[in-house]
Image (cartoon, rainbow, N blue to C red; front, top):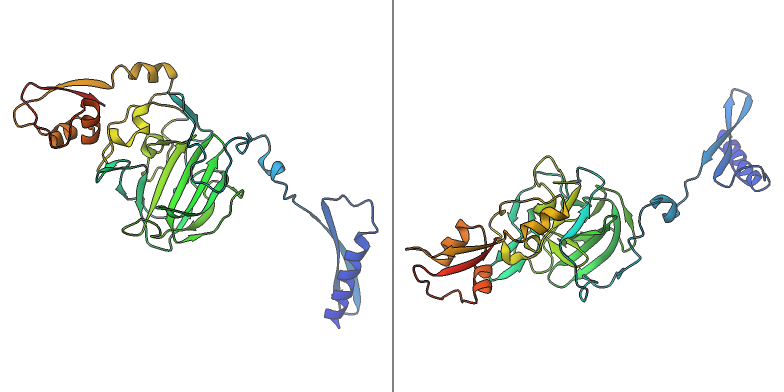
Length: 311
């Protein structure tokens, strides 16, 4: 009897809603009965309704979908040319760790096995949850050749982060994500030799060394709220995937431009030198040395020979 009374009263309350013009459109009024012995009391409850309008949720944030918004291709900036140095600003001083456990980087950004590795590999077990490191909008969420199941999030400062080799994608293109929001499960799809998260950071098609932007220890800190990026930090040939090169952060455009004069160094070959030893001592890659000096990996070095190193 009590259940029947509750049901009748509930539906009567909802039906009365359409006849009450004074109720705001963003408020739901429900009449609930409360029975004590033989008496019935009626109580009105008003519940505010939250709008799902994306524009309202995003507020005054910039329209990051205005240019080169393509949800079907991995890199929509393929035919654009960037102007250096690149300026990226952050509104926060921390990011959300993409994985819940301690971040162990198994391969850094740089030259690896004769080809560029344009991101970092973070160790995980297939099925581990992966979250977005910053708030933004999902631009790409599908299978990508090489990367396997992939999610690309464009953030409100223009930066894009890629989460590759996932075993499961839990979002779709045009979804708005908050910082630290779940987007899928880690895995081993695509061209991968073991389960890990391949994390890529890019800006308008230019791949940026993730460790220039973010500190991947337990502090989860962004290295600076205002960063200027030179060519060195967008070219894998300048780096080795085996470790992080010496960081030189530029917080002003003037600092970045001044650094361009210091990035080329003349090295004089000494007795016992090899390309491998020179690259390790100067924190540059063999590929970069060969490219700059127009020599091959198997070229013979002469004592006294001068090499141009791009650091």
